[in-house]
Each structure stands twice: as structure tokens, then as C-alpha cells.
Image (tube, rainbow, N blue to C red; front, side):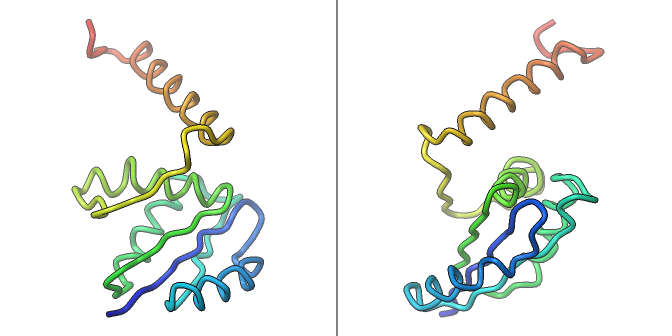
Length: 128
């Protein structure tokens, strides 16, 4: 059985900063680790989530752990919410940040506001 962990870095980084963390997790989880590097400044979250989905397609693991730091967490969220769900390829099991997390709460509120905004500016709002 192959277990892998893929680390998704944050803004302005490239994954090298996770070397010690990935090493520790590799020992504790007895897994292979890798870092997904993406253009955090020159490409948007949606484009990076699509690139991550393509990267995941090339991986062959029985169990795959995805770890996102900062912007990497938002790329993972976009991956689950809009890329994999659109294709019907959601993971069997996933863990999200706790609801009381400050950054998670801000992201959730922002998503709700964007959703409301899209509906308000839509030519054919669903509630009309």
C-alpha cells in the first residue's frame, strides 16, 4: 500500500520551506512526501487548483494526504469546491480546518458574500 503526502505552499514560496515538516511527517506517517510548486503570484487560485488537479492525476497512491499552508490551503479549498466537485471526483474522506479557525471563518464569510454578490448581479438570479 502506497501512502503519499503532497504539500501545497503559500504565497511567494516554492515548497522548500516545508522540508523539515515533510521529513517529520514522512517518518510519522511512513509515507513518501512531495511539494506541489505553483506560480503563487502570477496565476490565480482557480488556475493553480486546476494545475494541482492535473498533478494529482499523475500520482499513484492508495492513500493521499494533502497539506496546504496559507494560500496553499485556499488552492486546496478551490480544488475541492470547484474543480473536483465539478468533475464528480471528490475524495472519499477529507478534513477541513476547524470552524473556530480565524482564517477559515474569514474565508467562509468571503465565500458567502461572493455567492450573494453573484446572485445579486446575475442576469437570472435563482431566487427570482
